[in-house]
Image (cartoon, rainbow, N blue to C red; front, top):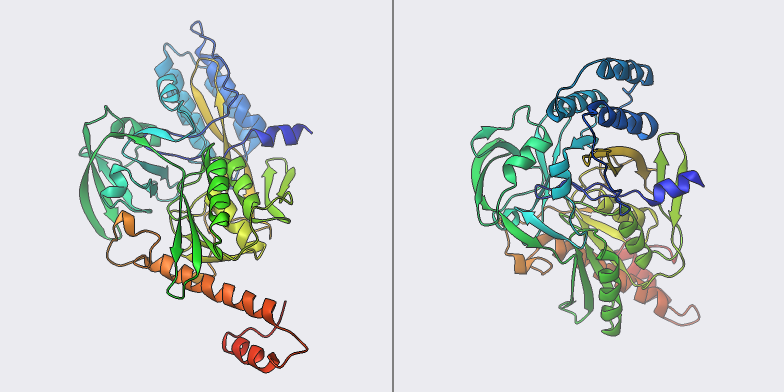
Length: 444
């Protein structure tokens, strides 16, 4: 029961330049310390000791206990010294997702999870092996997206300040600024580096968009694009599916490309819109306690489904795509996903600062731990060599969508052939011939 209550409060951590994460709804009222800087240090230590999930296998509790004695034996004259000590302490964890935020940073990230941000619209992570600042994905419709920033781009400098050795907090400080001002990013893509000057803007994100696409053969396809798994995403997806069902679509293309993640519960709810029964995801805590989420028998549609993914599909996106793939509910088309299978929760500290701490990992229904390795699509398709316009995403000018639509048509046709087959009629030979061409030899 204790584990169940804990996991219900957990969110997939989403890192952005304009806000640093999504956090627990039951945000506690912070108390002001009276020069007791050791109290906040010990608060961080206690949270890590109690809840931290070590994904690297390098965390030793004995070393962590010794570290506590060391940091608490020192005297701290101001908060800056205490905060530096906390960051040094956390650096021993070898986990870029477990990190400390000062009160000002913490307050700036207290945004409504409906998706209103201020910034340039990118999510970043620090690669613990290369020490690079890597862009998870640009958010569609933001200055970064419009400027052509891509998933896996590396940030070499910010306003001519090198990011070598820079932590995420310092990078966020440099990129964040007043609305209407500009920031210059030096980007490394492959072996080529270049500069992008981006305007800082207020970014209002509608999580879900949808439309009906008609194929050349007249089939109606329901296209649903989810940009972020925020608090409204499940309801918006539900509304989109219900609307598309009234329009008699024959199947769905669910677009999770460049979706960096968001709320864990949102990803579970959206998976249930498509998956009637079966495991969706399992969450494993540091103590090996496992909680499994399943379909609730209330799927909104059973129609054929294809999911589009790419290198920027991360975290909650991987939960949904992994659930659909492992349950054989649909086919995945595109490129291998980002590979983030860790769950973070945000904790409020005693002085109003905050801590994001890795508390669990998740497994796909087949038990796959996708952290770092990502999810491999059923059909691998590269994106267009030449960039397409935003309005062309989800059209036949979109190479990955075009491949996804083609696969969906094949699935629909096979389903129709099976449903129309009459074993006591003369259409048996025709049915077998058609299905041999498609390399399908079974009615299962």
